[in-house]
Length: 173
Image 1 (cartoon, one colour):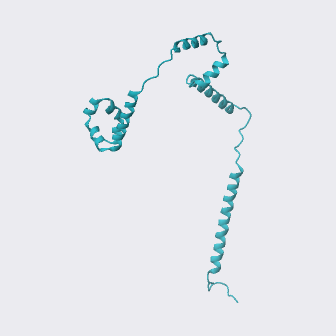
Image 2 (cartoon, rainbow, N blue to C red):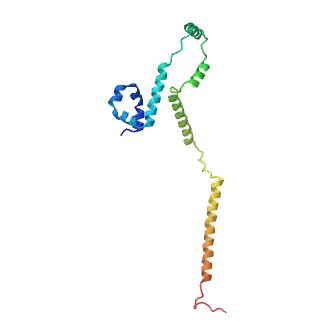
Image 3 (cartoon, rainbow, N blue to C red):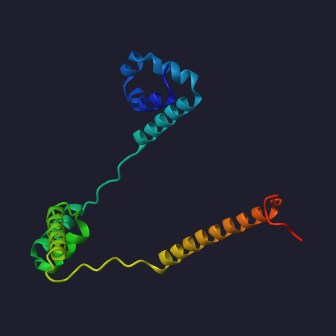
């Protein structure tokens, strides 16, 4: 069973090559059953028909002479300076040639920075400081634990006071 995805991927072959269309009858069967694929194939045919009718515009009779004049101007022009060439290169190139140099520079900077952190003689590394938010959360957690302990003590006192007195206890008056 041919799906619409398979049929659409072969539409250009079906459009341009009659032998391909006759060799693959599953696509013609799908096109007869699927209105969407059939409409897309018809749109391709209409587009190609329009392209067949299109005529390229005539070239200007002075095209060659204008082109040669511009080429002469470019050859005779003052060469760009170093900074202009660098600016053009950085603005208009993909930077593929600069990537290895940039990677090497970055690796060197990381090694140099890491080495300066490791080899500091006589200076102890200060302990990390905690933020005020972390300190507040710790205080709240400790307060919560203390409140839970107080609630447990209250519960124990209430349980003890609600128990009936034993006969072995001291007499009450």
